[in-house]
Structure formats: C-alpha cells, structure tokens
Image: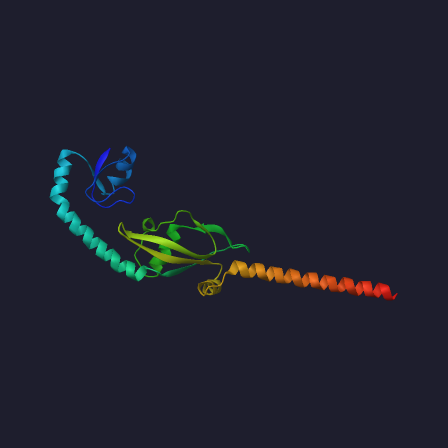
Length: 193
C-alpha cells in the first residue's frame, strides 16, 4: 500500500514523502496513529493544502521536544531491584519502569518514547535512548541496583560485580593460606613426635 507520510517516521521517510509499506503496517499503525494518509489523488490534494499547517505544527512540537530534551539529557534515574550475587536481576527493567521513574522525577515521558532493544537484566549503569520527537533523541542513565547505597556507589563509578568477585577471591586466598599454615603446623608436630 502506498501512503503519504504526515510526519517523519524512523526507517521509513520524511514528511510529505509517498512510500510503499505493507498493508498491515499501514492499517494497524500508520493510519490509526495519524502518521500517514492513503496515497490517493484526493488525499494528495488534501496533503498539499495542509502541508504548511503540518510543517508549522511539526516545528512547534520539535521545539517543545528540544526544550524538554535539554533538561532530560543525561538525567539519571535509580531503579532498585532484587538481584543475585552475580548481579543478575530476578526479573527485568522494562520501558514502563523507566517511564515511571522519569515521571516521578518530573518529566512527562511515555513508555513508547523509550527505546530498549532488549530488557535490562543486570545491575549497573545503562544508557537508555529516549525519542521525544522523530527528530529529537536524548539519552538517560538507568542506575539499576540492589539498594540505594549500591546505586550511590555505582554512580560514583564503582563496579559492584567486580568488587564482589575480588572479595570472594580474597576470602579464598585467606582460606587457602590458613589451610597451608595449619598443614605445616601439623607436619611440624608430627616431625617432633
């Protein structure tokens, strides 16, 4: 199906372009969302008459998104989740969780504006892209931790999974040294008797 785009659509085209898309994509997404019109002669004439209004509305929306983007860019949100010793979460952090955290921080962001290729399943600092407008994309940091204290340590740059491994290695080294010392003492006792 051929459609006329009413706004820029990622990986498809710019406003005013006539593009060929699959029928289901047009019927289920582009047309109901008001992002496109069917490419008929009447709709082409209608688009030509509406073009200046659409461009003005697009510029207005883009400027508003840019203002919000300046404030939002680089914002860090903390998400406390249960996780195992290795840092693997007992669930995942989704777009809805990040949108709720940003809303609690005072920004109006919907979960459809947050772009996650896959859910976050480990603790740590994760860069999350947020598309406020088709032409305005910013990045926020999702600080996923087991507790608020860990989140503070992570934001300072500590890698908690590495520290836990180091602590385990230190404990193993101390245990091995203690065993070696006790074996040496046992051998010394046997040699004396």
